[in-house]
Image (cartoon, rainbow, N blue to C red; front, side, top):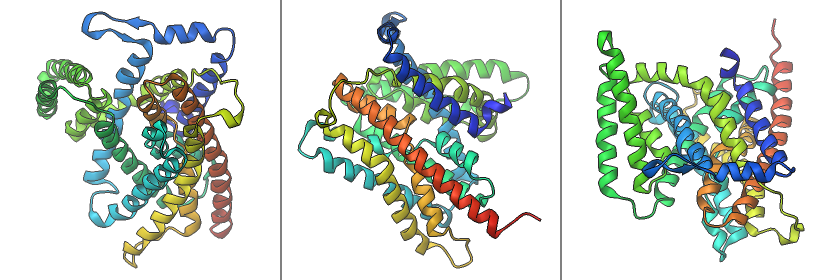
Length: 380
């Protein structure tokens, strides 16, 4: 299991699954896979398509892990004080605002403007994976800054999903979900001794109930995973994440990437592609690089002189890594264009292409920066 916990392995599996999904969708087996993706499983109030079981069900586990990591950083990590959090926070906000503005520049006045959140997300697993593969010799403060920025970026993405992709929520079901989540959090503080097993079973049942209530309320079900991760006691949450992480890296994220990338490449000329396609392709690699670099530079003025600073070359490199959207960008694309299959397909291709550009650019920049650091600071 240890190899599946590796950031390098997680990034490789994610990329491989997305590439395989895109490839198979454009072969003779593509129609059968698409039919399977749209086939419904379950019954009654739990009848969902296979695709929705993946994006609404399994992906909630990934967001649970993200929420636990976010809570750790806010309580005991690199975001546990305003002085620590302000620099990556400014970079994260700028890294969301600039891509959104670039996207709106392409889509202003069209119905595709609703997709502005798509290029605002950073894939933590993939960005850290690229840094791990090509960044041998880089100081740890670059990884710490990237992690803090990506965690805050995910927090913004969670807020965007909850606010902008929710219409007429059922407030009664949300209130009941809040009760279930609260009970889950309280029980997590009693997980010890002989009562560990029955309490654990009850917590699983409460988690499933909260997930269903959030799903049925009209709010995206991944928000339930976020809420459960934030309220769970830190020590048992850490143990649960340790158990779930290999499943998330090795199965859930690759399966989601495969499902999201099941897109038939449209037989159109570049001129016929929607403005949303070009907005995403440009905003992800370019907007993130500009936004994070600018925000990181402005945020550097808030740091005390005794704090280690990240040079401009480091900020540019982190900005390039931030352009790797993948998981959350693909989810945003599904939510934004849920009623327009063609726009959703082009959006998926745009996320994959924009992220691929960011991967290549960031890999080159990380390699060059790492080579420079190894030359300036050779190991004895």
